[in-house]
Image (cartoon, rainbow, N blue to C red; front, side, top):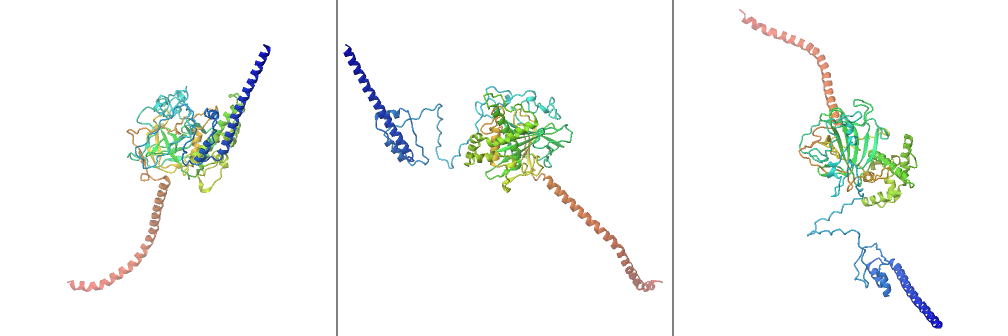
Length: 597
């Protein structure tokens, strides 16, 4: 029995050994065939650049059934990329192709073709490079955005639901319960009320001349004021969720002359100056001009001390591929870049280690430390390669068709310090002629290019949509470069605050409220036929005065000559008259004697 058991055991071992050798040989054969196939693919991949070579790949597929089953199981896959356009499809292969894996979301419905071909090529689809930030699940009552989709809870169609309590209202300062020297200047309006859902006085509108007579009899007369662009206490630069804002400090008192913010004298009975409260920069424009929407709008909100209204100047800005850099406007953008990069740096500092609440620089509150932070922010511009790679590189390649390197994009988009910009003569315009550090928000030729405007009564263009605004819409835009326009978009749509939160509320690359109905309102337009500029008016007046002075001088010159000539004429005329009289007497004497009795 032992011999039999031993014999069987030996036979079993021999059988298993033989079976193992067979399996190993089979595996080795498969691996060998697979290696040859992969090497074949690698060799062919360098040559496969058309449909004929792709057919060749299929011709080299292994014929071993096990290998075919292994390939078709999807255990591995290979693709051959082509950089040339396809010439024609191949007739087919001997082996079935694998279908792609199903997508996680359903495919979109196919588009419906027109019955007949159109005469003109169809327009390219609109591309929005800046994705929307998700709506917060638990938002405060003051939250609003520009989402016009069906799921929008605080988009323009629901702005009437936005509520402000007390000083949360951006215009509460001017209410009877407000603060500062301008307290109560809007006492005639309920600034705490939300007017967004009301009809009749809302802005923006499509601006056009409705035939109303132009009431103003002179241009808007702006004054730049005393504040410097770099002064922290007098000018505050802010990147808000829907705009870039430049906010000015108030006068010490309503009647105080100095120091004064920028201000303007508005025509048509406003009387005196209206101080500039803030400037908002939005893209695209909120108003449209005779149906045309501009790339952006520059809005200057003022406040009159006695009219209980806010006169606002709106200037469109535009660009094209050849528009030069507006250097005066770039001075302003430079300061917004400082804010952008300072907050981005603070965000990064908070996330250097695993403690997101720790700021490695500590709490720094002094002016010197804040200045140091700003200088550091300017230095950080040069090191934001990831930011540039994910943002401006793609953006410029899409919209400019320029394959710039990361360094080139950084130089164009982030080296915005005026000190680092090289003036290129006619390719850059709008150089400020004012003293260093000053910035005129009304500068002629850089911001204001016309003396004439449209006008109508409207509202603010965001909640609470207060209807106390008198709009003066300039009929001529100012121009910036295409890159400057893209900088504005990037500053608003990609801003990240110091807590690392993306704040923009844009939708479809827009922070513009939809156009509102005009209703019964009238829009007037003032042109050169109504009034000329102050410069031209003064020139005309000077010419008139000069003409009057010349006429008076001529009259004054002629009077002494006439007075001096009178005695000479009298002295000459007297002897002549006497001689004529003497000659006449002898002739008359005989006649008299003959007729006498």
